[in-house]
Length: 363
Ligand code: ARG
Image (cartoon, rainbow, N blue to C red; front, side, top):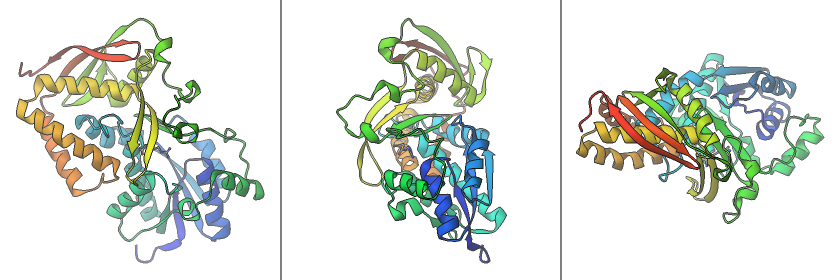
């Protein structure tokens, strides 16, 4: 890394307003050479089209990395096994993707001999912390640039900057009233009108779930696990990502999977957050239920205590930390027997385990 130059920057590019303005500023104001990295964690966007945006505003290169398998295998799998939910509710959707994106930035920077990486996070959220802590753990010598945070550019200012420099904003839905981040594990919605914690989220904020009031009937679905990892839906092999996708669809139709909470951010702010996480919550409910049938009482109780800490570490950006690694070791040790099936009943706004069976029950 010693010969690497900070004139060469690898940027985590999402295709949104902030990261697009960031490319332009790094190239045209600071004279740096920017490689944009677009990471596919299952957000369901046309990433090659977004990559062309980065090139249009001055990036030297734009690479799309399909990281869906890696996200499921290396990030969602341990999170499921640890029943990871921050403050008992939020299944860590964004918190799980950031360390992976950080890892890919570091890999790309090494491959290209770049001396710096960059992100487009603001100074108010947790994501800046997750990127910087993860990058610091993986590549202590690498410089991290955070132009959006450091310039404290507001959204109207960013739009003004884009207008002034002829950046086409056609693809940014005008004045999106909140901020969305999504991946295989769920969808997060925050900011804008949602900042008033008393105001009920407008129905238009939701895309994956119908309102429980609009759902009717009930249906059953059987989720199968192998060593704590979800593998089947109604007996069909689907893999973790396939199981989550199926339960996102079924749960969403049932009006299940909305979370509306006041969350304590790492940066010391209380923030109203809304999530659509039907698949994640259904998988976690089933996994937890199967553990009741298969884990020893003392292990189960101790694991429940450690899970709280585990979720806090992940939330705080400490994915690549010694304590998180040690807790992964503990959790992995407990999961060998967590093989079997759980039957879930989905009814309007609810997901209830109604049956469980295991290869090696302790029952
Ligand atoms: N509050 C959640 C978290 O801290 C969601 C963050 C969503 N990030 C975003 N850039 N919209 O993990």
